[in-house]
Amino acid sequence: MVDQPKATLDFYAQNSARYAADTGDSPPSRHLDAFMAALPAGACVLELGCGSGRDSAVLLSHGFAVTPTDGTPEMAAEAERRLGVPVSVLPFAEIAAVSAYEAVWANACLLHVPRKDLPGILQAIAHALRPDGLFYASYKAGEAEGFDDLGRYYNYPDRQWLMAAYGKAWSSIAIEEVSGSGYDRKPTRWLHVTARSGR
Image (spheres, rainbow, N blue to C red):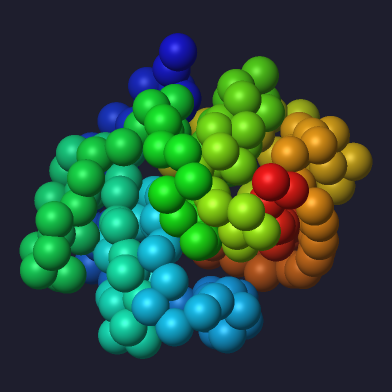
C-alpha cells in the first residue's frame, strides 16, 4: 500500500535540505506545549513525519524518550544531522508497533495520506499507543482531496469526514479549527486533532 503519492515523496526528497533549513528554526506548533504538559515525565513518544527534527528536538530537551521518524530517507537524514540521534525511515503504512508509546505526535504529516488509506493508518497508530495514549495530528481543511501549487498531495478533510476516519478506536477526540498558513505561505484552515486511545 502506498501511503503518499509519489509526487509528494519526490518533493520532500528533492527539497529536503531547503525544507529543513526553512522550517528548522521556525517556532514549533503552539499545540506542542499542551501536548507535552499532558504527558508523564519521560514518556515514550513516537514522532511521525518529523521533517527537520524541530519538534523532536523540543521533546528531547524536555526529557521525553522520543523516536523520531520520517517517511522520506532524505528528510530523515536531515533530522538526524540536527538531532544527533538515529532517525528511522517509517512510511505511515508500515507502522506496526503494539502498545509501545504513551504518545504519538504527527504535526502536518498525515495530511498527505490518501483518503482511502487514512482510516487504516489511524487504526495502526491507535494500536501503537498504550491504553489512554495521547495522539496529536493536524490537517489542512477542505472538501476534496487534491494537490497544492508545489505538487504535494493533500487529503483536505472537513471535520465530519475526519471524525468518521478516526473511527471507534479512541475514547475521546477533540478537533480545533483555526486559520493559519503553511510552508507555501498561503492562508490555510487547519484542523488540529487531539485524541486518546480507547484501549
